Length: 200
Image 1 (cartoon, rainbow, N blue to C red):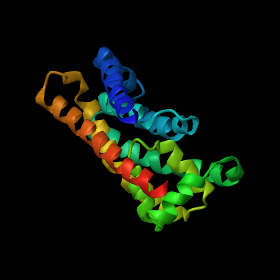
Image 2 (tube, rainbow, N blue to C red; image 1 turned 45 degrees about the vertical axis):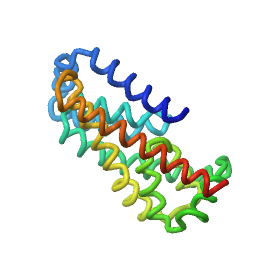
Image 3 (cartoon, rainbow, N blue to C red; image 1 turned 180 degrees about the vertical axis):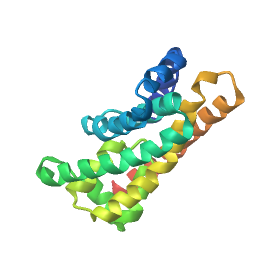
């Protein structure tokens, strides 16, 4: 069911963003000149705190800013946002149910760095949840930030690549980008089933 929802989510993003006039969006961003990249980083810093889907930010950034600029800005935003969410969770750690996350840590991968890399590579595990849970469980902050950015790089790269090709939805590059995102979802679904078996 989660895999089906993931695929529908990707299709939804593609349909919505491809229906926009990309030239008008680009002109809107260019009106802010050199501050366009700062606005995008700001979106990454603020919106995920309120559980806004990171995938939409990545695809939208690729569609508006282009591949390289969106990727660099997204990684900066991920680092800043992850730190903010981590400390929010540490402060309010008593409000989070961390039992299952703790079992994953103890039974599957006790090393915090490897665990964060793994969870970042599984897009079905929400980006926001990983940030909050790492803070609630008081993971080492430096390990969390480094692993979080490295782990997010691959999924961000694939989503942003899809966004950067979304205007040319009839091209080979677009369909290849879409296939890679779907393949990532299939792998994530398979890994998640393994995790669930090990923590039940």
